[in-house]
Image (tube, rainbow, N blue to C red; front, side, top):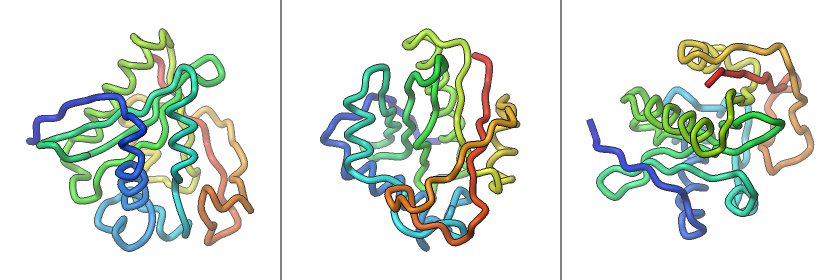
Length: 174
């Protein structure tokens, strides 16, 4: 297994983060891994401005996992609505299933608990992503039943290939 080093992202990491998140979720490259959204969405998953906003926000950081000098995975960890927030989670598709994602999740949860002082962490997942939701449930996240609308018409979040997309909030006690 690759030795992983964690660090907070800087503005210099933005191009590599856009590339990693895009290849983990969109287009043919994403089909190498199991987290692909290519059948649900076209277009971009994240852009430079979104990452800049996360880097500049209070109580927010982007966690980077590196191995042998290469970017392996990332996640956005923040405080939102009086809880930790876990998002923009991406693992290089060629490395998915290797355990790196689980290590990133544990580190993100630790940061939410120890650095941000939160007792719970939440995420949003497209509710038709049953396999992905099951992955998170095996790691202690529970479905809250809270649904949020997908931002149809805002291409910053992708171009939907179907009309029934919405997000579900998952939560885990820390």
